Length: 280
Image (cartoon, rainbow, N blue to C red):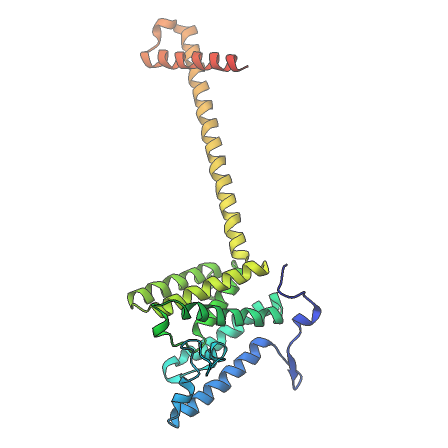
């Protein structure tokens, strides 16, 4: 598997141990998000919410150069509500398997790329950039779920739902919701994140969903060709059977007993036999 950095046994090890418990990147980020949510909550209830809002990403700025990395950690619990908790669940359910599969270094880079690249591209899209105000981790973690689906497309979620169809379903529903609400910023953000996740997995050589799609196309084309061959073979067998029955009728009742349709079929068989002899 191609990776940004050579794999080593240390890549599958946790970041550190806390009181004997392993702490991987995903778990560390869960605690980091909880800490920053509580910090933002404290600022909001103390009427200093503008400080937190100042860390949202609204475009490249010399005064706030790190906002393009920090904005996923800016949380407004009043607007996020239970979706904040769901984002943490996503990070553990889907982030951990991705981290274990590609290694912690590539995992950190993957999250960084999915954070920076969509925001950076949106900065230079004129219809989008004036309304740009990114914060929170919902879109980033949706990209993480798509990454999980690319690696484990046939895995099953709750109720036996297959991951690849759930991922495509969510992407489709989000698209319809954002278009219906004329929410072009979130629409662009979601699709750029999805494309970034796909490109990153292509680079890592871990895009099993695309490989599955190519295999499905190959199998489908092979199935179509097989059905065509079987159809032609059956048609050929039916043709020979009908000719045999006509010849039996001639030997039994004479050629004058043939109908116009049977004579035409016999003539076509004769022409086909002559063409076959000429080719040989």
